[in-house]
Length: 291
Length: 221
Image 1 (cartoon, one colour):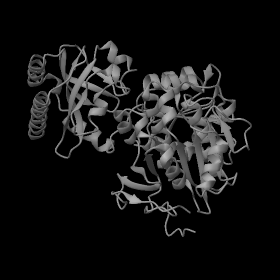
Image 2: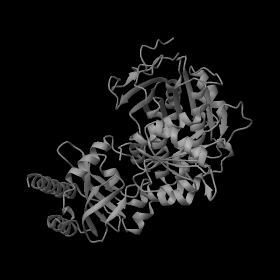
Image 3: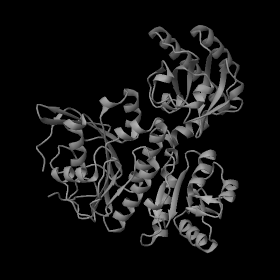
Image 4: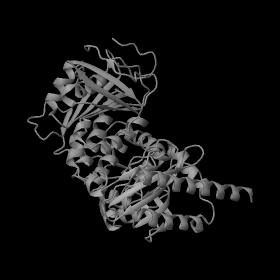
């Protein structure tokens, strides 16, 4: 298999689809073809970097495609490739933001291929801010993601200590993967993963400052996030953990079901817990490398 | 008249050095006291192959185009296009202007933007400056800020990969500080603007070789 970005091309007419696929392949993309929303749904997975779709499909329209893509791969770039003018398209929901290349411009397939190739390689339609050096950051997460990481007892002990020390509902250590946060240890709840667009840690990893949200209902970034309500996260404090190069690989955090403030002393203590996790991770990585 | 020595974007009459193609700038400051003017001045292009796509959210297209011209923009229907989502439009002045019914319709704005971008590009104006004047209605009309994040990733991504120039204006006093900080993360650089006794000052964060201290802005072109 090549390392080329993968684009999924959805057009109902097989001949037109083949021509579009050829243009996309000529632009250096690995292309998979589908002819309907149903077949697209079956072909979707997180390896897809970009979806190119007609607007009119036999079993739905372009916005049905967008919905299907967002369910499986929320960050994936979707490009509408259609003869419809923008004003002729029905209005989509705000979460359906897409790219659009009209088939009416000259050499539209070549133009589509240019836009798709650039988007598949470099663009995200994520509903959250992405760190500047995301590619390097993800490589760093992989380097630290050694075997048995989730089974490190020290993290369980630390998070248990944190819940009693801060008198909070939940303390956790999370690694921030490409699509979701993965909890290595979680005291007080049984969380395994949380999508990045729902996770407060998505913002924590952007800065070396401690992130405090005293009341999620009062913070416009999080007030509408249903997942936080379902997890009973009303207040939050988190410190990012980084590798030696400064790549943020995850966060050490406290949450509670009630609004809460943190004193300077408490935040200093949280930083010390995070320092401890960082050292443990570094140690495990060295041990793995040396064996 | 500017002389293009390379492919960087230049800013006539402003105390700014050229910026690399693909740069996205956030202009912050009081909208009525300088930030809107600064945004429009950054969008003026004297390049022969320069085009402009504007998203008007806080005034109708006619008003925005008049303001753009007043601040040095050249109104040429082939190279200047507008998406009007200010909800107060009357008759559309020309086919280079389209409407989206509300600033809440981010999907519609995004599609119209891409359509205008492609039309501009297909007309041979391949150095496209794009402006959102201003981001405030988009944030106000969308309760869930994550929809705006997705919109910004999509728009700034296209500008970045197409070697364009993006300019979005935001009044920081109209939003919570956390929102302003998170929005700023989608941009390569931030141009702060302030008005001092009628004179504008600017400073730049996030970009090298730009004035990082408050610097007087000239009277314009």
